[in-house]
Image (cartoon, helix red, strand yellow):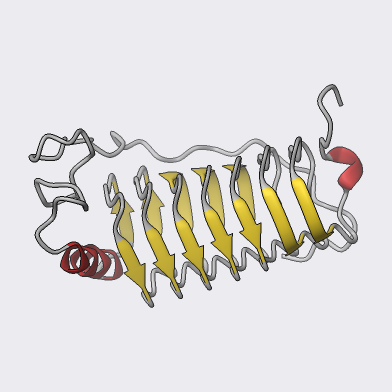
Amino acid sequence: MILTGNPRIYQAPVLDYNGTMFVLSPCAAGCGRPAISGANTCSIHAADSRKEAERIGAGITGQEQIKDLSACGLCFEDMDFSHRKFFGCNFSGASFSMCLFTKTRMRMLFFDFCTFKNCDFSGSDLEFLSFAGSSISDCTFEGSNLIHINYGGSVITETTFNNSDLYNSRFINADLARTDFINCNLKRVYFIKTIQKDVSFKASNTEEAIFEIGE
């Protein structure tokens, strides 16, 4: 997807997820955290959280469409989740290192307070996701649709969003360093109270973004 200084006119998305959302079964240990899908405990009280991550990872890679998954707090490393369709899943507090999400389709996912290192989301179609409070470093979202995404309070470093459509996304109170938004659609993107260091908006429509309260 190349925008080349003339970002496309955004049209409201059709939200095509009609599932029940993930079921938050409580951890059997009574800690109040959600249990991992297919287990009765959370990641903290699992007998072997690494094996649980491997089980969940294998389940994802073994099917094209993933719905209503709860995988909070698990650690995923060097896994290929590309070309998958995710709907209504909860990964809050999880960590991802060297994972591929290229050309994925995601709707209504929670990645709050996650850690992403050297992960690739390029060419993806993402809508209604939350990365609030997450740490994102050395990652790419290049050439993606990133519609209605919440990056509020996140720390984002050495990451590229180049050639992407970020319509109506939020970076409120985020910390951005050495990160590029080159040739992006920034219409109705909120950068209020962000900390920016070595951030490039070259060839993007920054005049349609919101950097101050009251704009």
